[in-house]
Length: 336
Image 1: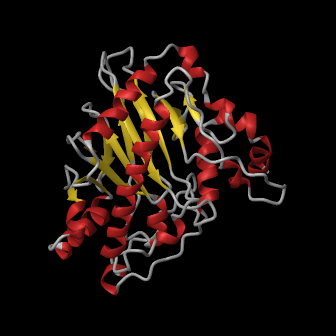
Image 2: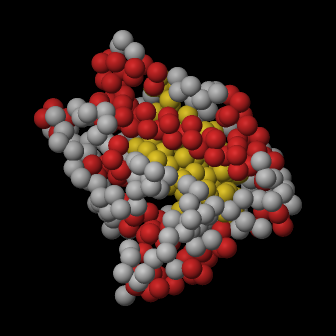
Image 3: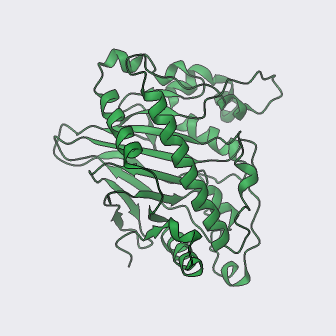
């Protein structure tokens, strides 16, 4: 039984023991679906800086945070109050800012796919103007590390390391969250974020020193992703599960609220492709294909090969207030 997450030194991907490294990465991605990444080269100035900026933003008076509330954004960007995002049908006990690539909204006609309306600008707080540069610098580094992990995974799966690159051009739909988990009033732990899987290719998480992330093992027990200084936590998303016919499997995970009197901060980054990406099955080497487990079948969470459709369903489900304000036509279509 696995009771801890593997540690992967991504710097070894370009080193002399590449073959041994790829074996270790393949094991971590196939058997667990979650692993720590070290050797990534992101400076402490950047990682410490983004957490410091997060603490300063969430310490602002509520009026300053609500200036960029996500109900002002058709693209679901901006600040979310505690208890207004939903996972697995229940309210999450966290407040956060959702941030994506800095792009202008597209001029679309009625024939355009609805998911293209997700393209648009971020919202930034006027009371903390430096947040923009700090977060976008961190985003650039998170993208670099995630792309390197994805290239290593491609090699570990018997492909050219550039196999996935086509979908991750300047139009890729990556995004991140700057998150604060406030302590609960009661002493007993509750849902920080409910059990779920991520629907992109990879997720990369920077944690502070407070634990709370848990990963479901194959036997149904929960593994604590205890923070390791200087590391990121990386996990497999549903798009890679589809691409590998379940050889790589997106793994359930959740966040338990911090203890009474303790605040937790984290920055998750989601490596997502272009919105028009459609996942095509990999031609796995026979020895890996024989161990593929098939794609998860869940009527409450069907996996779609078209990324934009999958992403839009996730945003609509998670942020009902934004959906009702900006997406009533799509909600009606889904109900019919």
